[in-house]
Length: 135
Image (cartoon, rainbow, N blue to C red; front, side, top):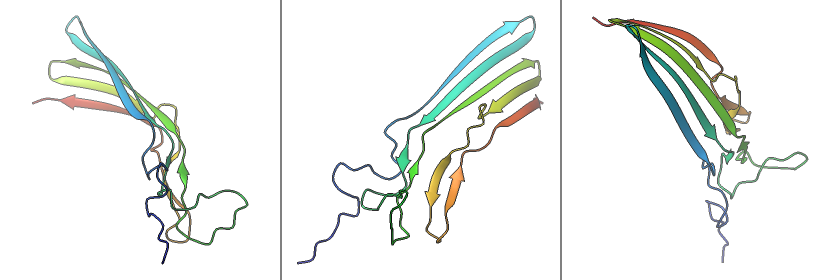
């Protein structure tokens, strides 16, 4: 009889890319001052740690001898903050924004499937201005 391992790992082990906690929230305040429509907005996105493979694959740890290229990496938790404010008057609008305000750089995916370590990271801080005109 051949013993076959469960490809999803032992019962109760974490699933791949399934953080135990993940949420986002956004708060927006709008008001009118004279003939200007103004707004201010803030948002937060949080993702707890997660694993890149199921529980049946070994976890990469210092000093271990691993003989597979199907390593199970742990993605770190991260929290991103976004803010924006803007004004509109008649057909014109202007918005200032900052995405990933605290410039958190964390891995969202790690793999060694091509025999070298590859990581996808969070987008770095982005500051910008949007100017619009409605015809």
